[in-house]
Amino acid sequence: MGFSLSSSWFLHPELHHVVSKMSFFDSFLFYIVHLVDKLGLWHRFPVLLGVAYLGIRRHLHQRYNLIHVGGINGQGYDTDEFSYRTADGKCNHPSDDSIGSQGTFIGRNMPPCTSQYGILDPHPSVVATKLLARKRFIDNGDQFNVIACSWIQFMIHDWVDHLEDTNQIELEAPEGVASGCPLKSFKFFRTKKVLSGDHHKSGAVNTRTPWWDGSVIYGNDEAGMRRVRVFKDAKLRISGDGLLERDERGVPISGDIRNSWSGFSMLQALFVKEHNSVCEMLKERYPDFDDEKLYRTARLVTAAVIAKIHTIDWTLELLKTDTLTAGMRINWYGFLGKKVKDKIGARFGPILSGLVGLKKPRDHGVPYSLTEEFVSVYRMHCLLPDTLILRDMRPENVDKENPAIEREYR
Image (cartoon, rainbow, N blue to C red; front, side):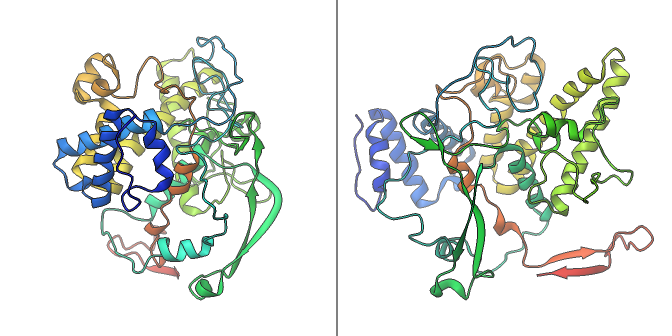
């Protein structure tokens, strides 16, 4: 039983029951990081102190904020037989064939809220207007551009999407905020509640594979995988102009095409070409590999490249602090660093050798999944500029210093 600083100004009432379950030492650590969060100081700390802060947060998160939803219904399997990424994410966890597969429940970091307020109180339009609306756009110069927004959508399409109900609902903006909303009402499909068979009673099902498996270009099931493959030299479909192929309806052919737009499709095409390039390299070095062996190996390589770019390139550029740079590199390489890991491998656990390359997954007693809270906050709409500018990039017209503006969208 930990000690308590239970004043409502300092600790939200919804957190009291979580802190009450902590050990004395962990509750002490919690109040330290909570105070730092209240003061907004962590990114200003010296690097070692900042890394210690992040380490404490991760320790508390792993111990108290990983909540499984649904039963564990999977089975064991021959891990030597499935040493590759399957189409639907099955047989990718060594102890249970269903963990991380399409159709499993989305987990949680906190128990569902017990507030007396309903889901529309406050109204989502009010929340968006008061908390999320950008008052003015601050150009971050060379740090980021619109491709960064494309990337995060590219990742979300790899990880998570809620199974939807068939009934469409409509939300209308209240009068008090309607003038500030570009849409006065909008329709969408409600998330489908699925019986979970545990104390949560129900939960949401992930229609994608939550693994970092490149399903955004490879598909989330057998049908999706077969649609994108050529079945020759293990390659994926790509058109002659280097963009995604399209079907007879003009729909792009790729692993996941929901909410598709040019920036998102561009990244899909880029990594389809990366996969195909890896296939060529593997075929040259391993001529005895058949189509299936080439495909499975190239997928492992390409998915690892995507994960590495996101971890130690994209995320570092997004947050741009020395502390975050150190923390993400420790996640990947460990405290001993890249040179030591490249030389001797991941021999000393996640802290010293990083999370990549461990012989066994570290699930902290909870089957792997992505969480509802992660989905709720992992949104980067504020990165979008007020105006999207399309420039004429045709070779005969390109002024490399200042390509002509073709159209502007506001």
